[in-house]
Image 1 (cartoon, one colour):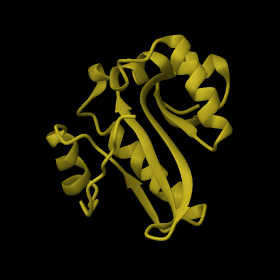
Image 2 (cartoon, rainbow, N blue to C red):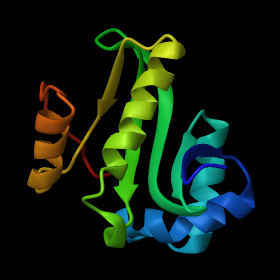
Image 3 (cartoon, rainbow, N blue to C red):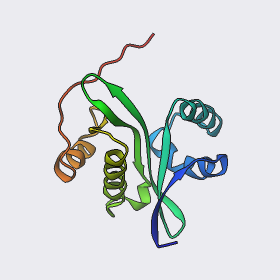
Image 4 (tube, rainbow, N blue to C red):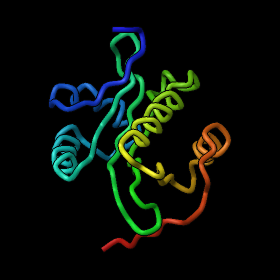
Length: 143
C-alpha cells in the first residue's frame, strides 16, 4: 500500500489498534467500554475510518448515515481525532475530504457534526479550512 491510505475499520483487532487514538478524544472510555459501545454503535450504522501513515493510524473519523427533515440524507460525524503527536500535518483535513467524497457518493446532501463549545481551534478548522457553516446550537439534558 501507499504511504498514506484510508481504511474502514471493521474488525476487533482494528478497533483495538484504534483505541489509543480514540481515547485521546474520548478520554472517559476504557478499552472495555469502548469495545462494548462500538459494537452497539456499529449495529446501529456507525462506521469508523482511519487514516494510516506508514501503516500506523494517525487519525480517525466515526460517522453514521442519517436522514431527517432539516439535513435530508446526510453523514453525521460523531468522532474526529488526530493523534496528538501527528497534529498540524493536514491529516484531519485529508480524512474529512475523503469523507466528503464518500458522503456524496453515498447520496448525502450534507456532512454535519457537533463540536464542544470550548473547542475554539477546532471550530476555526471547520469554518476556515473546510468551509463548514455554524448554523445551530445543540442541547442535551442529563437524565
